[in-house]
Image (cartoon, rainbow, N blue to C red; front, top):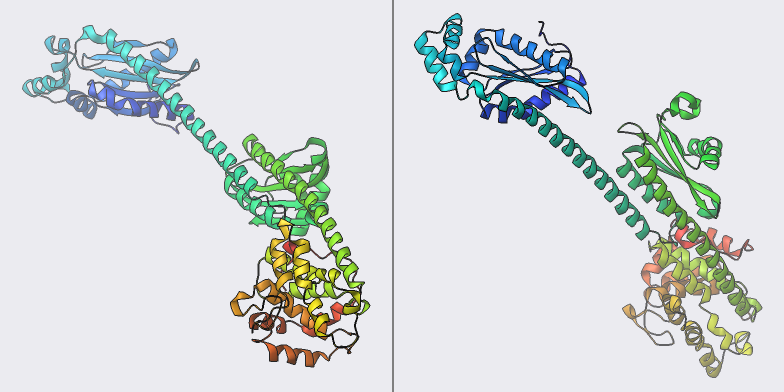
Length: 551
């Protein structure tokens, strides 16, 4: 029989691993064992279970050949078998089955007392070059069983094989369950994270960039992309990519519009693990991809795309995960659109309100809108966050709303105001604060309205605040208000020259104006800003501050 090793098959490797796991228990029982594949070829060489077997294996291959024959018998009968090994010991063979399929066999042998008593063992020792005394001493250290135990050991070997296979299957199921639990935990954690980050006032690009970063980690892909429709992103299509994108933004936009959108409209998911084969030039660098839609009111508002799985092909687990995330993202898309509509409505009402105030005095027409723009530019240059910039913009827009309570003859008086008239004029910050004071969402906006006529030196009104007592909102709006007043025509004077205005702002920095706000304003291109302010407004709606980059 030929026992030369060949390239191991999957089944051969499985039987060898099984024999390796059994070695501790078989050696403890004093059993030498081998593993054989389904064709009767040696899969794992013998591991001696006693000093006698170790000596025999070193000096002869007769026992291994006999074990191979016993293995073939067990394989052909698909049942356990026993035989006598050349040295007179007992030889056992049991098939290894998996779902009724024969993977191979395990054989085991052990020396017995009867072989020593009838001289078989000593005669075999002589063929190995051992003297009787040495052979007896070696046998005395090795023999632990008799032939009467062969049936028990045959059943034990079969039981050990079956038991170890069951344990291996259980370990595999446990590992699979553990992997599924880990995947589910990652999915739930990611969905929880996304739910917690769904702030409708944040720019869509920022929200989808965070989603794509998380997809990279959880799905093991080289790149993730989100393509968002103009209706969801605030006026124009947005492409967000993270990782190592195989395509540029414009190529991804075209891929989404021309190839993926039609397929998503029909089947709602795209899993293409051989994309490059049919992709042509547009598929350069794309090995495989997965894409799912973001739906809002049965309308395709965008899609999430995963490129180039790093651990093989995209599967149902990946599809389930990215679909769940796309559903969450669709909620954000819908809510963001509704939020934007409410914001537009609110800003329309506020602009209409301020326009009605400005209409009381034709010389100050557009003043509130201009102060709002300048206030926003200063806040951006000072590095304030988007929400703070928006609050300050609204403070500038509404800073004079209290003038609705000031008599028109005082507002439009061409000459110097009397003390009584000036006292009436100084009431407008407080009136404005009272008008808006009942709106909780405008609390921080009211701060800027109420304090925009304070001064750093404490000579302002209505409270005479000094230094750090003067809130930042009031400092910024106050500077913007003064700049527009000086550069606008009034009943009692013409607009000042821009150079003179800037010199005045520098002179009063630290007294009337906050130095940090003044420095931020003076670092702007003021001449260009002034030209913009003098242009007719194309819309009453400002760009949402949360979506603007600092100037």
